[in-house]
Image 1 (spheres, rainbow, N blue to C red):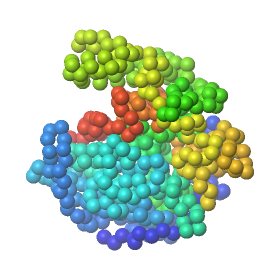
Image 2 (cartoon, one colour; image 1 turned 120 degrees about the horizontal axis):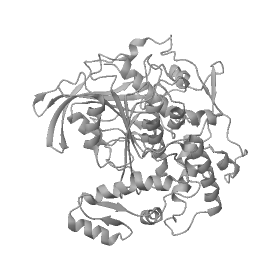
Image 3 (cartoon, one colour; image 1 turned 120 degrees about the vertical axis):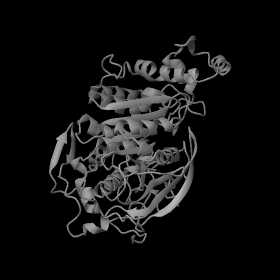
Image 4 (cartoon, rainbow, N blue to C red; image 1 turned 30 degrees about the horizontal axis):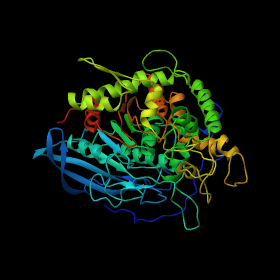
Length: 519
């Protein structure tokens, strides 16, 4: 198979002025219908070469012991006809053919679509020598539990379960041309991932696996993108971007979504963070500015009310006033209970002696209870200053994510812009940003009941993860559940950012929701 050489060329992308517009909730976004691959580019360039693989063998450690997996590996396939940067706009495909000497037919297996995006940085699979080689920035050798996307545990266990694994690269916020123009800022990453899904679905019958049973996975920013991919399936607002890349004329909807600690809903993340962690001191023992924290908490209360969400536990509306009780009773206390039940009697006794804020109900129906205030004290120092995501000095990765042209970082909230200390000339959010925020936010699509969304959701994060608010994933879960989607959402007790302590359960969940039985 012939691949284009790794190269880069300038392509200015944006929503055309001639595109139709749809306005909802004060946000105007393009609503041009999908046009598929540009007419001047032959579709044959996006045809999957079934013979261009290398056969590899790897050993995967599972709950049932080590499994030797022989698989076919397709490397660095460019997934758009008119790439901006092929190093990042390419994907790898791994297909098991033999597990412990037994032949495997993966022709109808689920497809795990595992991105390795972290920090909204560029992610490349071009240098990978086998499954699990993609990392932010284009490095190799992903680290389970880190900020490197879906984590190798998911990919390897999926392969050992007989699934097909697709690992896409994507452009990210730090990429810039020789003239200093940034070409990987929002919405480049989600557009690339959608284009990669389209490539897979356009090659139904050529790429092994069931292209109607694609399950995404990602962590942190990659978790946000996985959520967004699930929420925004076949949304018309991305059509111009996809057409300009020469994306395949196919659906970009996925069947199910796996998201770990998603850094999502960025335009409301500052308020959510202060609602959650505003009382916690920083690692230096100092409080953040409490006036700013209070103002942002008020913003969160207003935003939360506007969502009109209901608690998954059936106990009424989900508002800022009752969110602490909701997190405690529906997520945090059950999380602590699961953790403590999994310990030996002696280890449990030792843990409880060290954490006297927990009241433990003995017996086979043991239960952990504690207060919200004690939980916050237990977590300890908050990880970020205030505002956490759109700081006044434009110092966050998210400011860079919304940079444009030769401008490295921009404010994306009115509050951040109004209180700017970086010296930018304007105290207003740039006019193109409301549109880009909608393109990057899964909540936008869930609130509009997008019919092409994923209907199955696996969402996880650690209880000690103060990289974002615990409400962010809970809102995604409540939104999806409110639409009738199947949601499996829980928190890992005492785990931090990027934790994935039940990957085997995720692989089993994929089989259940897709109805797959290994042949």
